[in-house]
Amino acid sequence: MLLLPGDPLDPRSVDPRFAAEASAARTLGVPVAVVDHSAREHWEDVVAAVPAADDAVYRGWAMTPAEYTAFAKVLDARRVTLRTSPDDFSIAQDRSRWSDALRAVVLEQSSGPVVRTWWIGGRCTLTTPHPDTPGQLPDTPDLVEIEPLVTDLALPFVTVDLVRRTDGAWRIAGLTDGQISDWPTSHHPADLLAALF
Image (cartoon, rainbow, N blue to C red):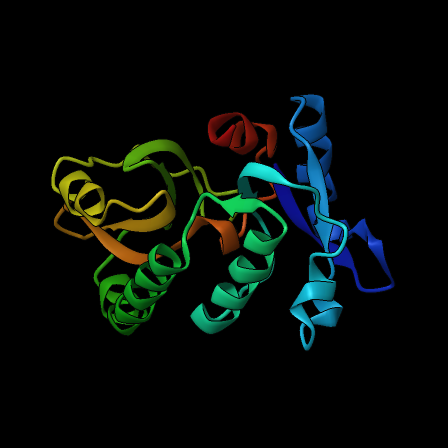
């Protein structure tokens, strides 16, 4: 099941920013449920419209590890199992803060656009432009050095942003949980949903 944020003006409908993902999921036969982020003070209300599911992936707005833990707890009470556990989410977000500190240095030494790679189950399944530069088609990155590092994290769904240094080597510019990573507008979200489900 795909969990998507509700429209702030109509919490029962998918937020317009995620409407294309909802449509792609439904076309692929993936059930979609809406979570109401406007009710974050009462997490039970956030997930009130979510039916039971053995495997759920959230795609939406950023959460802190504490918020994600609360989210997972109320979903668990509704018999909904998130594919990314609170511990895995926390690890990814810890790596995100670490990589943010290095990002400026890496980008200073880079040549070319940032490449966003999408990792599911420790394997790079998609390569896209970065959402900030959706029209800049990136080179296919060499993952020989990077793949073991990401695989060793054993996280279910993350994005890793890469840049090519001026000496030609590919380096990590950022890592975050894939559930809260933006998808580039230049690519159809059906590619992501087909890889996830």
